[in-house]
Length: 158
Image (cartoon, rainbow, N blue to C red; front, side, top):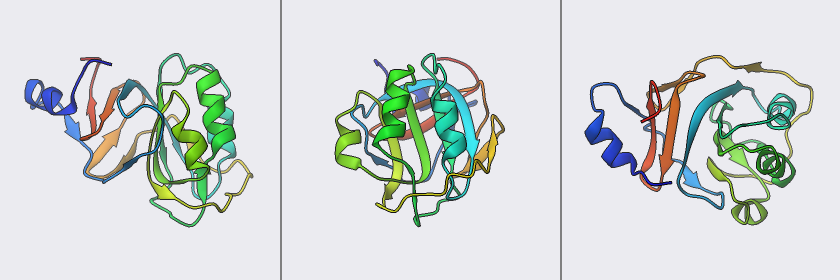
């Protein structure tokens, strides 16, 4: 990927949104971008697993876990599904587990941190709805760009 979020901000400052949440880079790719898909779930990852089991076509799944640090929403199996199915990345407003394995995958992963505790598997949550965190709204179909400096959202591909 040949972009820098700082350059995107400079070029599109009137229409760009920047996420203020401080995420850690935990995947094998620190720089990734794609059309937004979303999931809102709290300590339950069954819905996001089912979405990542479908063709991603270069999209980025933005997961609003409410900022919970109590249990992981993504582990190595789910991240592996994302790679197999062509997703560009996952942004988790929450935590992941299996961070060493995930760091070795060709996938962008940003999360608040790690916790080895598993989440529930009941399927609770909502998909493909606008989600907001870090002073930024992530709307399905818009574009998200992530790199070492942060995460930005544009109405369309830059």
